[in-house]
Length: 144
Image (cartoon, rainbow, N blue to C red):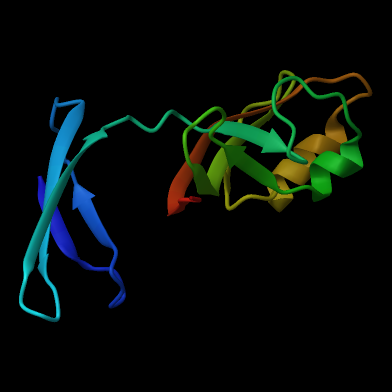
């Protein structure tokens, strides 16, 4: 386990638990008050894995019935449902497939020109699949 330096000069720290198999960790902190008194406290914290993100279109996940224009213009998003913290996940790329056409690799969170062409070839009622979504965790927002 590694404790990194302060985050941007704040009083927040990052603890990298690495590949530890432990599911709980004791953290002990100490500091010196203005009058010279040393104070110490310790707390037990749970270590949880971050679940895999789920892809979204218009903030909806699962099987969505929508129009060609919505798919063409909407950003592909990702969420981590039912997790203890609000996590901001950014989509960096995905694969796009229309019915029997070959899959297309897309960089970013919107359809590229190749994917738009494949979408234009789709008949009404076609199945469009967005899969293998590549994401990065941008930040963790902890709300007290």
